[in-house]
Image (cartoon, rainbow, N blue to C red; front, side, top):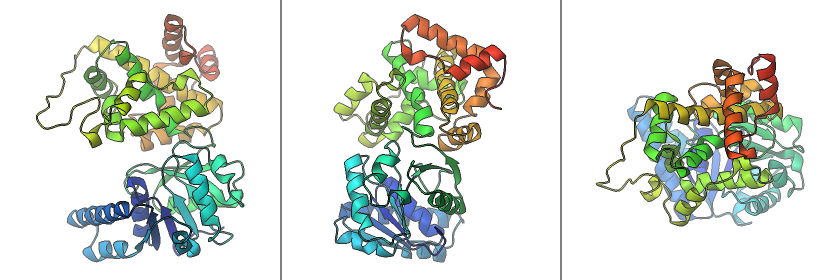
Amino acid sequence: MPLGKETVVGIVGAGAMGAGIAQLAASRGHKVLLADAAPAALERARDGHAKALTREVEKGRLTRADADAIIARITCVDGTTAVALRAFAGCGLVIEAIVEDLGAKQALFRGLEAHLAKDAVLATNTASRSVAAIAGACAKPERVIGIHFFNPAPVMPLVEIIPAITTAPDVTAASRTLVDGWGKRTVMATDTPGFIVNRVARPFYGEALRIQEERLADVATIDWAMREIGGFRMGPFELMDFIGNDVNFAVTSSVFEAMFYDPRYKPSLMQRRLVEAGLLGRKSRRGYYDYRDGAVPPEPTKDQALGRVIVDRIVAMLINEAVEAVQLRIASPEDIETAMTKGVNYPKGLLAWGDELGAGSVLATLEALQSEYGEDRYRPSPLLRRTARSGGRLLT
């Protein structure tokens, strides 16, 4: 299953993610076909490529000729109908980056199979859907794999490689080798809800929302604490506004449902109300913060003691989630550390952070929360308990 520089790469979905993957593949020398059902999306993608590559030229990272060559390697395909998909017949790899709807993804893959060569690879960029379920709709599920990029794809270094239980080993190996060759840092994840990053990171948002809902601290104070005391680049509410509350809520809801409604992943009613009201964050100019002209940013309460309580609570939940990922063999400890530092820019790996604090201290924080709330949401991972009892280390 060789995938090389001569491989024609198809991308279906010309939103921010699909357009970014197309630019990345073209910059690595591939001929690229980029399709979308909406002509306006293709036009935005073209404009985005032109602007992004012009910035690279202005910064001296590319020559004008190189930038023009990258753009020339991208051909847009108008539509995703059965007729339009015929254009993908020569592709050795097609990456799907459409809406996070299982039925839509399955239908697309069935449509693509009718035109692709038998050894072509079909990849999904899904952030939360089952790769096995997508592959299950295909006549050749062994050639389907998850290749999950992070936005913006040309810039973010991490890519999660997710083979389904039906994925052929040579497809996994070829896909990882190709993406490594694109200059990305790949990690291997099992096909579980949220994979590594979107599973382990859930408490960063969920526990911050719980703290705000309890009125323990307001949005600005929680963000201040996580930045200034916790060392995170962005606070959870800033980041949710940047991602989009609709996107963040959809991923949380998807993971919650896929995890059989485990209370650890329970979505926030407050976030649901913001989505229902159309307060999606930066893209709608209102979310947890007001981005309209003349809006005055709220001032945080810069109380170090309160800030430490906030950070300890959220970080303990994050560490516990990372430990549980090790316990369930979702990924290797090393790949979990890489995923959280390279994929979401955490200030340090969560397992190393747990060793720095001490497994016993993290366990005590979780047990205190579980005792106070009486909720399974705060249950400690069995591996965390064992490590605390033995006095061992989480990252070994």
